[in-house]
Image (cartoon, rainbow, N blue to C red):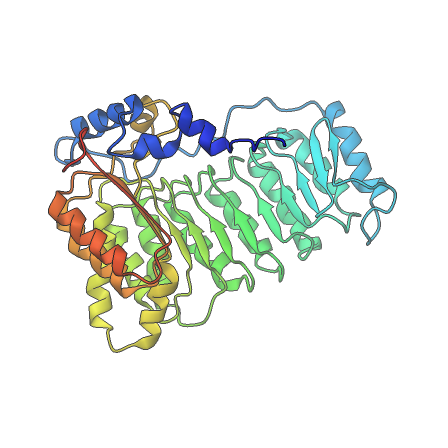
Length: 407
C-alpha cells in the first residue's frame, strides 16, 4: 500500500516555514521578532515631528526598455490578419498562444504586460486590433505608452467602444490630461467592466474625471486607482461627488492603496459609505499615511448611529464591511521601501477597540485582519468576544506586539 504523501502545509510546518508560525504569538520565530522590534521602535506616527506628503506614493512604472518593432510584428500580424473574424480561432486547440512579446489566451485576454510597446509602437498595436473581434480583455500594463498611447487608445475606443470589457493600463505614464481624453472615449462604452490604472500619475485634478467615468459607465464594477497620486484632496473630492450622487452606479470594488488619504478624505469617504445609494462591496485602503485606520471606522460608527433608522443604510454597511484588512505594511519587501514610499506602520490601539467591536457586531463582516497591534489583553479580549459571537466571521487574525505571548 502506498503511504499517504504529506501535504505541502505539513511539510512547511515541519520546516518551520509556515505563515501561521510566523504570525503566531506562541511560536518563536526570528522573522516575527524582527517585525515586532521594527514596528515597536517606530511607534505611533507623529505628524509634528514626522510630516508626510498627502500626494501619495510616486506613481512610477516598473523599469523597462521600449521594445523594437521587429519583436512585436509577429503578434501584430497574427491578431490583425489571422484573427479577423467574429468566432474563436478554430484552427488550433490550445488555451493560449505565446509570442515573444505577448500572450493571447483562449478566453479573450491580450496580455502584453511589461512588454514595453512604448509610444513608438502603441499606434501599430491599436491598428492591428481594428479588425479583431475575438479579444475582450486588453492588458498592456507597464508599457510606458504615455500621452501618445492614451490618445491612440482613446481613438480606438471611439471607433470600437464595445470591443474590450477589461482595460489594464497600469504603469503607462498616463497623466491628468491624458486620462481626461481616455474618459471622454471610455464613457461611450456599454461593456467596460474592469479598469485598472495603478501607477499612473492621475493627480488630484483627475478626481472629476474619475467621477465621470464611474457615473457614465453602466457596468463598471472594478476600478483600480492604487498609487495614482490622487492625494488626500483628490480622494476627498471624488467621495464628496459620490456621496451627493443619488442615482445607482455599477461600481462594487475600488482600490485606493498608497494614494495619500489623510484626515480630509475620511469624512467624505464615510459620508458615501453611509449613503443609501452606496453599493460598494470592497474598499481597499491598506497603506496608511497620516490618519489611523481607526479614524475611518470611528467615522463609520458615528454616521451609522445617525442613520440607525435606515434599513437601507444598515444593509449598505453590511455589504461593504465584508473585508477589513488592517495588516502590517509591505512585509514582503525590503524595510527601506516603507520609508521610500512615504508609508508608516499601522498603530491600532485600545482607543479603537470599541469601534472595531461595533463593526464586528453590526455588520456581516467576514474577514478581519489586524495583525501586529499594541492593544492590551483587555482590549483584545473584547474584540475576541465580539468575533466569537459573530455569525459571519470566517477569518480573523491579530498579533500582539510582544515577543512572549501576553499583551
